[in-house]
Image 1: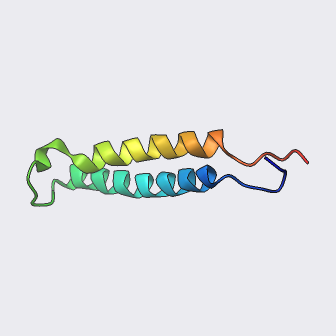
Image 2: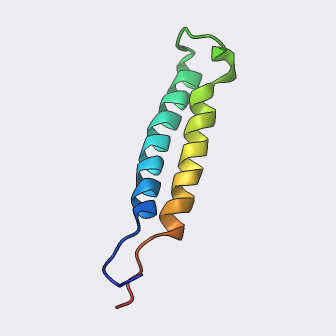
Image 3: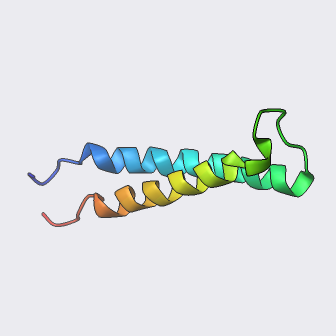
Length: 71
């Protein structure tokens, strides 16, 4: 890879991190307040699981494919 080019996987990692943090935050608020969405299988707390998974995956991609400062 030439210097100056940024991998698309870095941007995907950033997006997954942001979305994961937002969904996980919503899941935590849902857990604390006790106001859950009226959906089937709400007892499994999908926002906590998916938010956490997306956050971890996004951090992995963001760190692995971050642009280097080498010239």
